[in-house]
Image 1 (cartoon, rainbow, N blue to C red):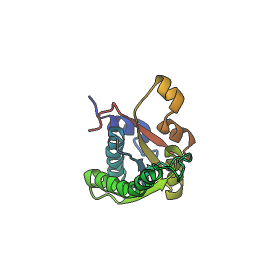
Image 2: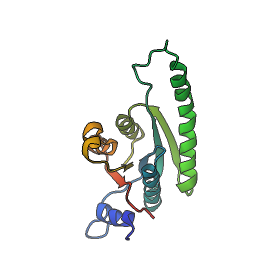
Image 3: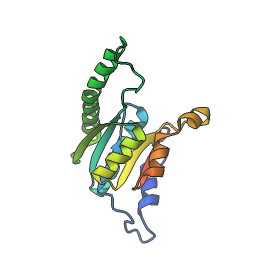
Length: 171
């Protein structure tokens, strides 16, 4: 199977005269603890290497549900989970950088927000030229009810978004 990243880069970034049409210098890669975000991280770092770009890894920490009553016995569980999530986020970002970073300048961004809004906000604040995000490629009822974070980011982002499907084979 051809390298999907090289094919997409050729299509996305080069004009007929083989001159770069876009020059990505700040690439934001959205990651969580899934296989599709792992593929997105690999693709994003490969692009950063090709374009001599810096990377920001962003991990969004979902907020505590508003309907959790602090008087309930489960409240301490939610609070402890939330306290650990910032530490876990940093560990995840460090693991991704160690695995794919290859000496590329990397910034860690963690924020408590909904996924799509947080990714877009961090991209705007950091000034990224490109967002790389993975997608499960869900369809049908689940997609209808829940929507897609990648799709929402692609529609609302001020910069280009490269969506890496979970089924892709990024070498």
